[in-house]
Length: 167
Ligand code: GNR
Ligand code: NI
Image (tube, rainbow, N blue to C red):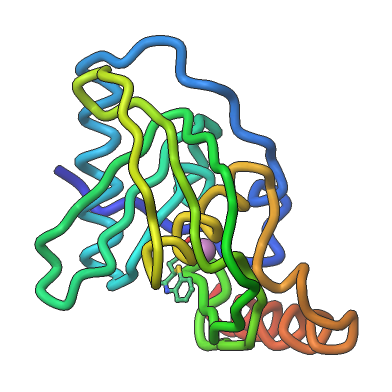
């Protein structure tokens, strides 16, 4: 297992649209394990392969208090429903910034699991929010895209400055 490096906004690689997984094999299961280790280490409640510079349609999530309810979704397809709800979102690729974002309160996900089986799951609460956030990553979309241009520009400038200091 390995903790992978997480790309940070405004890295252009975060804008890549991920490709469907064509074979659920041992290499893919190793990547899923590394994504879980990276998410738990960060720590975060979700991670998309895009964030570790792998442009395949894979997400992992665990919104449980005890960090013991892992879900991995390969080639996820979402159906959204319910009310529109506002949540303070953050992102491991936008470290230190939290802003309100509106999403659907419920989602139904169809995907493959790491065994290669087709699965379906009804999602609500933070799990529904987080899976929508992760599926956006697979489209090259970030939560800051829902904010005003002014807020997004401020966040970009602060992170660019932090990256210069670190480099
Ligand atoms: O750790 C995370 N917290 C979070 C909080 C509110 C809404 C979405 C998230 S996902 C984020 C981890 C991450 O960046 N996943 O892509
Ligand atoms: Ni994120």
